[in-house]
Amino acid sequence: MAKVVEVNPGIYELFLPLPMRPTIINVYLIDCHGAWALVDTGMNSPESIAALEESLAEVGIKVEDLDAIIATHHHIDHFGASGEIRRRSHATTHIHRLEAERAGRMVEFGRMSMTDRPESRAFFQSHGFPIEQFAPAGMRPAWMGTSMYGPVTNPDKYINDGDVIKIGDRELEVIWTPGHSPGHNVIYLRKEKVMIVGDHLLPKITPHVGIYPDNVGGNPLGDFINSQLKVQKFDVELVLPAHGGVYHDHQHRANQLIEHHRYREAEMLDLTRKHPQTAYEVAQQVFGGEERPIFHVMAATFETLAHLELACFEGRARKSERDDRIVFQAL
Ligand SMILES: [Zn+2]
Image (cartoon, rainbow, N blue to C red; front, side, top):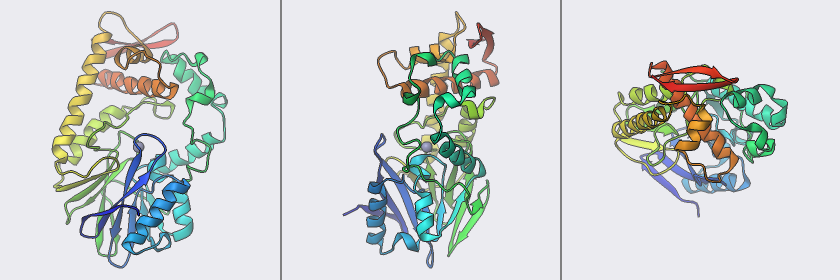
């Protein structure tokens, strides 16, 4: 029997399985009294769809009964099953435009090989990533190009900061929280003082924030920190994260996440004080040089890059070019 927890009157937490870590994603079903809304969807695996069906059955409804899908962001665990769920339910599907674009691009990239994308090769090389040492197949997640990622790429509604989505007798406010993903949103139920936070405010882990070829020139870590400050202004009694247990003090957790990144940034800058270094070189020292799957080495490099770029934006570091590589140095 699937486990479903009613975390607030009419708000249900559903636990859907993932074949990677974290191993569970929490999605939230909201009884809007006359209509049903689902925030995030899980991925499109047979196991996850079965768990969703069982969980909904426990509440007394079917996939076909869903009226609205709202996505925090486009990642596979959050939006991967949206295509299938919309096909069966005709639920009105809401997501930020930047996320819908990325979902479309991920599907498109799934059909190509890494070597079809010379622009990302140049990007990797410019940050010192030894791309020639790694097989392109190892550079992408195993689910890419499979039916496990089956997102809606033509949503019914684009959501924006400050929107209030009215469904039945509920009002779901959209708060734009870029950082982990550029169009990430948290969903706020003002009357209930409940915030569904996606990956923005996880209780135990820090979400990945990185710079990739699709956001060159951006400052996602600066955005992430601003988004932490932003959510702190809302009155919240119950925080509903996508991974880990529900909790109460979102202001405290936001502060911890900000401090964590400030500490990391200082640690990284220290390494560049004597000699300028590439993001890859810094990442190797901070995240350890032991054998790790290439996907992790890549994520560590681009998370490091996000810290170094933030330091440049804030005047604590500068970047220059050395042998066609971009190197950073603390000021
Ligand atoms: Zn995510």
